[in-house]
Length: 270
Image (cartoon, rainbow, N blue to C red; front, top):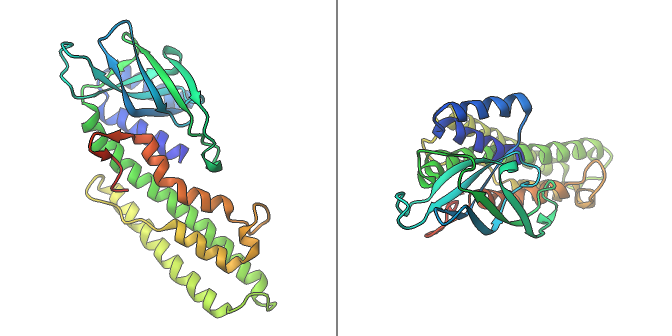
């Protein structure tokens, strides 16, 4: 999901950033392996002084990121209306102060820390497109595709683990209902392959409609049932605790990456 969020932000820069500055940033991201994240939950208000601050913002892997796409608003009378904009800023251009710590249930090391984000008015570069347009045209469909791909990867790991468990233990009589487990695995593998084909198809025709993914949480739970106690262990070659947490956390990580709109969560369709 770190890679998924990073790539969605990079895609937004490439589609909506105009001008040499954005092109140079894309080159620097590739050449220097810069990490990009986003801060969209609350807009920083611009035009109210020498800097703008948003409090209580969730910035996934914010302390490790080099570049932040941040949602910004324009104060009354500043000439930009009330529709929130979008800015690209470097982390060395802003003040990112941690307010609270969240451990994120161990989701691949991603915390749910909240920050106050102070953005000087002269910092970074403003996108021509407003935040709502960028979110609808690029961020939402990109994260839908990429999080779906992550879900397929999690399911694939779980199915591979359960398959190895059945092969290693079934012939020795340690797995009850061996044939039923083999059939269950085959059906789940078919669903995984269909989901992956769907994701590839929508990637070729980006943004056409919602992506039919796989219920990775149910797939992992099924694999854990096949592996029995070995699947519930934190360690060992058949442990699937990490995959279970990741599968349950995908949607919330997307919500944290995109944020909340006036009408509710922007990612209700995930």
